[in-house]
Amino acid sequence: MLELLITMIERIGIIVTLAFLLTRFRFLRNMLNQEKLDRKQQWTAILFFGFFGIIGTYTGLSVNPENVQINRWMTELTIDEAIANSRVIGVVIASLLGGPAVGIGAGLIAGIHRFTLGGFTAIACGSATIIAGILTCLFYRRKKLVKLRTAFFIGALAEALQMIIILIVAKPFDQALAVVNIIGIPMIVANGLGTALVLLIIKSVVSEEDKAGAVQAQKTLRIADKTLAHMRSGLHTVSALEVCKIIYGEIRASAVSMTNKTDILAHVGLGDDHHEAESPIKTKITHTTIERGELMIANYDSIHCQVENCPLGAAIIAPLTQQNEVIGTLKFYFSSESAISNVDVELITGLSKMISHQLEIAAADKVFQLAKEAEVKALQAQISPHFLFNTLSTITSLIRINPLGARKLLVSLSHFLRRNLANTTETQITLEEEMQHVEAYLAIKEFRFSNRLTIHYEIDQSALSQRIPPLTLQPIVENAIIHGFKDKEKDCLLEIHIDKQEESVVIQVIDNGKGMPGDIVEQFTQAPVHSEEGSGLALYNVNRRLVMMFGEETKLHIDSEPGKGTKIHFSIPIEEVIEKWTG
Image (tube, rainbow, N blue to C red; front, side, top):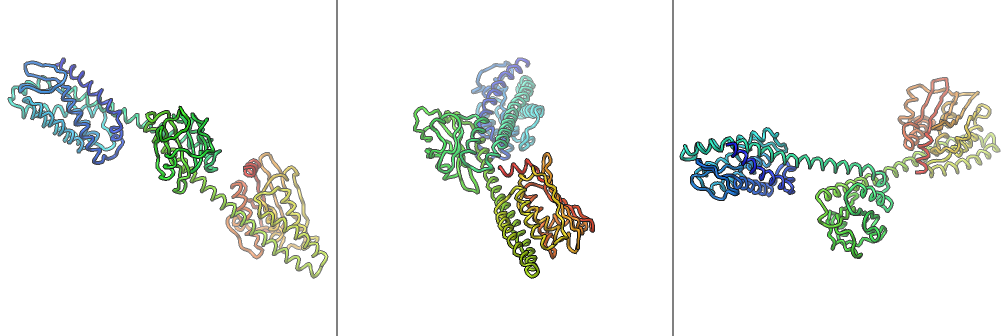
């Protein structure tokens, strides 16, 4: 019995080796990754594992109750012989992986084949094989493999069931009992062990696939992180070259190339001496990819390289899309078509989709920036009419009482409006220009306030080169004069402080006017506050433009109490302003 067990384990080694070789085939890997097999896959799996069971029969040992005879291949039996075999392994694995249809189908193929070999156990063993395929389906779990000890138990149980059926069906009973005594325990142990070993190999394939997928995902994410900054500017020669360099450094390919719809934008790797950037696309299959929007694989002939001995013998060409339109291609080159693996195809498919998404984001970001700039222009334009109407009202009153003063005021107004119109076409100006604008405004206002208004400047001259949004200080100053000094008959004091600190420029406008209640203060930066003077809209617009251009850190801060004046201050980070201006 021990000798038979050892010999059977040796024969099972053949089955295990065959199982390892078969796991290299794409079919089995696909089957392991499929949640549900289609009809074609089911028939392929049935034939596959049915053949597996037949091999298990042929690698068995012929057994006679009087003698154990070992043959290399079992092709036929005498009436007194039975087979110690590993047929049930293929049927059990078929049920565990493919489910009822595959398990029963494989059991029928292996069982019917066993009928044809003869022997007094032919009917019993053939029936037992079919029944094993049916009962093993009870252990099937979709997308989840059983544990190894469970696999050992299932394999041993299926073989034990066969021993019982032999005792019930095979005749004469004494001969059946003698055979079971000889082969029962060795076959139960060997087939249980063989089932566990085959499943162990299959589990290693699943683990290998998972690890390869994880590595590929990690690589794709790393490439995505490195290429995003370049793709934000769109698809052109500079961005394409940087992206090709990044991808070439990360993947296994002879060269990487990117094109638009007509020209090669970049080529990195072998063949860069003649596959040159900014030259027309010569490969017909590339044009086909652009026309169809489908991934294509090119061999040496379809690459159409006009240079002899070109090292690039094959290529994977994937489309790059934007708004559902193909705008270019991503190409991986290889030394030969045989060097292309399924992993390479999956990788370039994922990368082309990723880059296409990045281009979509870049396009959307560009539209957002244009809309943002348009909103800024609109907000700036809203401020100019507000000031103009107030100034014209002042000039109208001066014409009657001080014609010369009105004339000077009109000249100041013309200079102010010229600067005001120029500001609506700019997104940033220097603080020096903004202060000239504010001083022109205050010169106009002094005509109205006569000797009631005192202006105090405390300005760090080194901060005047700092850039800020135009029409930022003037509306704040206007708010102080029109709203803060309303009904104030004398001693109106307005202070403007500009201080350059280590990382920011701090700007303050302080008045000793009538101040505002706390609930009104909170509303100014949240939504336009409608008033007769319109100052609420002005402050709201200023705050909106500051936040839109430089972020929440630059929003207006308003400190005010009724009867105690108002202080409005904000700061602009120096580095952020420089980056936005130069970028």
